[in-house]
Length: 395
Image 1 (cartoon, rainbow, N blue to C red):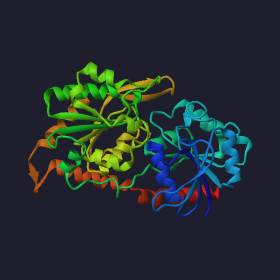
Image 2 (cartoon, rainbow, N blue to C red; image 1 turned 30 degrees about the vertical axis):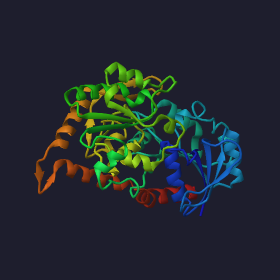
Image 3 (cartoon, rainbow, N blue to C red; image 1 turned 120 degrees about the vertical axis):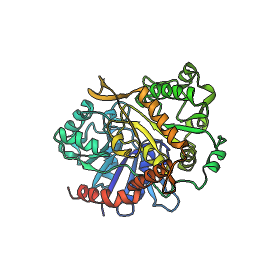
Image 4 (tube, rainbow, N blue to C red; image 1 turned 90 degrees about the vertical axis):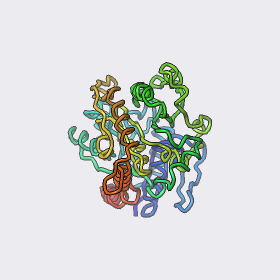
């Protein structure tokens, strides 16, 4: 049994990394001693955290490199696992690793790679950390990019609880609970408010699609506007495209105050006809797996990690885009191709043709559910985390 020090977002926050912290630390705590260092979501004194039926874990605030090293030593950690965007360390995230080469720290970075090749900020960070760090790729794409630069990464994909994220018995019931029309074709986007999520391209494609199919609606699970350099005022964009009457947002007060848990998301996904995540690059793309676990087909861009997460969905081609900050390539999805994918999904959704008594749409729903079950938290822990933790503890 090792002492594992997990550094990321607090486990009670509903962000992607917060939810992964919640799931993964509870699994790891079954076999190891775990402490969580929270770079966001906690201020002041440490506090105990225990979800229903789960293990009791201490959560400590981590503000800087000194906190990180002192807590690592105080906990007598055998290794630390950091889950956040490595390139953001010292910029958008705390400066955690400033003195790491002067301290007895073994570090594993569970890091996203959403571009090609590996971004220069990630590359320089990893080289600067030297032998004290082991990268953990969360996608096969990320593993290839890391290997191309000479690193020897471990591989552990993100995972979800497919016993929670699953199809509801009645689509009509799912929609009525959210005040939606059971007969509409509903497209959903669950994404952080950032230019990287290709909001302009996806909403432009929906405007084209909706002009042909007025029985369609777009649901957005995100914040309406975000005052940051990479934020998008979605209300302005919706007005510009004339979509105010057919686009709905998750309750903004609840979203901003982090009051929305996974139980709401299960209902939200089940109310959709299809999920659209045609972003310019994903390090993993958790909504793709969550939606498919609920039996919802997905549309995403043919780039980075998305390709491996949507074998039964629609993959969108686009134009390569040089990200000057990362010094790497992203891919901007083509608006016409997104529109075509929406149209193909719609036609399949409304078709009554059957094969052996099952419609093509129903067969697709069953296929995406079966695929998503590969990423169940229990499967991923046994297959990937256990050997990775054994290797980290033995180094």
